Length: 103
Image (cartoon, rainbow, N blue to C red; front, top):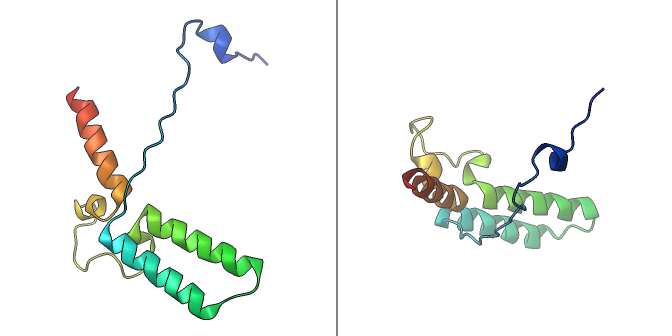
C-alpha cells in the first residue's frame, strides 16, 4: 500500500486559515429557540439526558427552522428561496457565495 503525505505532495501549499464569523438568526429561529427554552424551564428535568436533548434541539433551531415539523410553509416550492430566507446561516452563505462568484 502506498501512502502520500500532503507535505510531500505539495511543497508550497499555504497554511490553513480559519475565519470564525458570528451570524445572527432569523425571527422564526428566535421564536422556536424561545419556545424550547420555555418548555425546558417548565419541565425542569433532572437527568443529564434531558439537558443533552434540550441542547440538541436548540442546536437544530439555530441551524435551520425547517428541521422541526410544521415549520415549512404549506404549498411552498420544494427548493424555493424560502429555504434560504428561513435560516441566518444560509442567508450569510448565499451572500458570500454570490460575492465569491462575482470576484
